[in-house]
Length: 178
Image 1: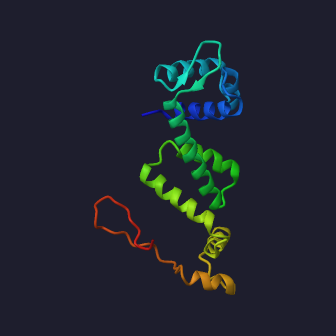
Image 2: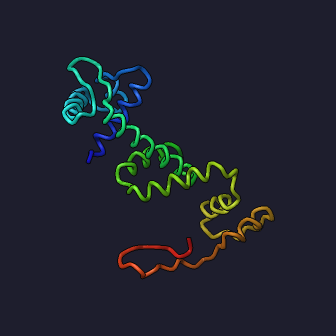
Image 3: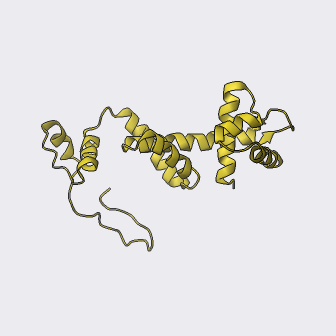
């Protein structure tokens, strides 16, 4: 299991190597906003774990193992970022939150979020999203008075009741409403 810090470095190395073919300490220092000594120390650690090809004072590249971890981390980041932006989160905050969440999200949740984002990309301006945006703006459940939205909203019953929690599995939180 990799640490969040290791994944961040691998992701940064992946981006730089994609741009210029290799990454130097100075590139990663700039990319992550950390000192040269921290980058050198991490390069040594990642090299010993078999994630990068590293020679002191030279550029680094990712091994197959390193590319796999970096690509998976970057994929999670992009899906999470896109999901947060769908929810109306500012891009800057979505970037920061996605970077934090990518390291702790479970595979099952990530799989579902990925499916949601892929589904959402294919639906052009869903009206239920307009209802959600109104809800976020006004702080109350919308009645969807607009005809266009009202037709769509009747398919997504909006009520002020909280979702019922299933007690079928102890400790598992499962909303029946979804």
